[in-house]
Length: 162
Image (cartoon, rainbow, N blue to C red):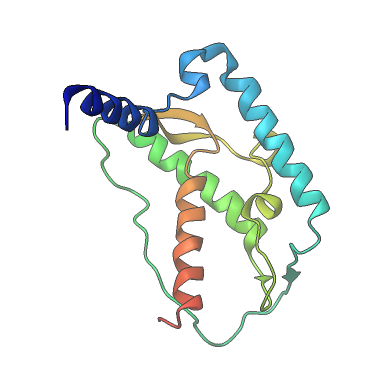
């Protein structure tokens, strides 16, 4: 293979394996509008998607389908311990809305449709968020831990693990 062919192959490889940079990273002023548009689009999809169903029940079932433990208080670098406590407040607010939800077979569960957007009026506080690999303060911080917890519970139930 001569040098010209090597150069062509190299350029093709570089073109096919480009490191894509997020538009909001290149133009930071676009970050909030992009997030707003994505949320609006997702909410519109959920509104028109009638497959998302769940039932609310007051009594608990008498069996355990799956178990999972998640540490609520842990040291993350030089993070503020107050943010850990406020994260727990946010988790309690979200769990109130999830309590008693029943997802029947073949139904689709939407965490954000049930929990809703965190707002100060609903009792949410600034908690621990992870953004760009750093711990920051933000409204509803800690809800990602709950959604991740639910993912693992659903995954365990779907695979028949206890």
